[in-house]
Image (tube, rainbow, N blue to C red; front, side, top):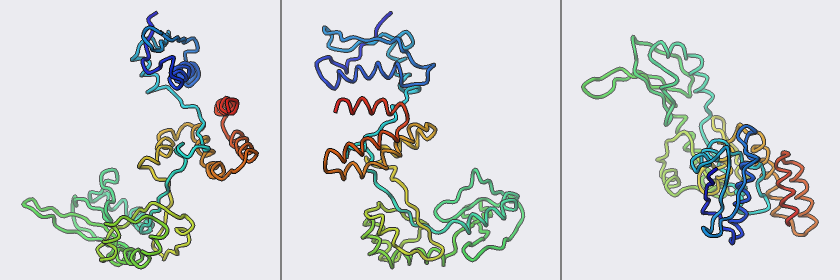
Length: 306
């Protein structure tokens, strides 16, 4: 059977040497049983300075790529003892208008709106409003004080009646005023972009929500919110610090991966705070006990080498 040369795995470079062994381990163990090849073997070709893999199930470069793209399952262990392991994640705070009045209005009048052209899958709430072309007839709806409802004509030669549902001006103004009046406190607790700060200071902000990177979660939670405004805290999912958050979202159906990520997050600050060998050993053991079984095996291999 033909072998596949892996040119990124030289025998005389430690990291590449270990990567080659890891490749065989991945083929043999890191997938559902039906996609594993426990008989895969490999060796270093010193003449070509590369590692060669021979697998009955994955006999070509294309099939190896397919294995890692479709079947490979990462070992459920993440390194909270490293500051560069991706677990020192940034958090975001979202201040926004409480969506419940809007959601209640759409739920109560959903059937009536649908009869006049509203399609939930097509017409989404965006930038504080919902619009759709009026299909037939005229109608009016009673709205709560937080919501405005109107029918207007679109511009252009082919003008059509359009339904507009949006936040009342008083609601948008109350939200903007809250942010403007608490701007200094928000800046102490979070990073406020210059453009957003300028709009708030000049009373030009008119959005229904705003997102900031958290600097002090305690200070964010201490900020008292008036009625009609809510706060959400979430892990940042963009930028170089968001790798783990993105991974968790993409692999949300893998209980072992999710369990391992959450264990890493819980232990991250403890690892960064230890100042002697005994404390470190205790945190390592506690972290190990929280991992799924396959992660425990990898953890034992790591601790043995250390």
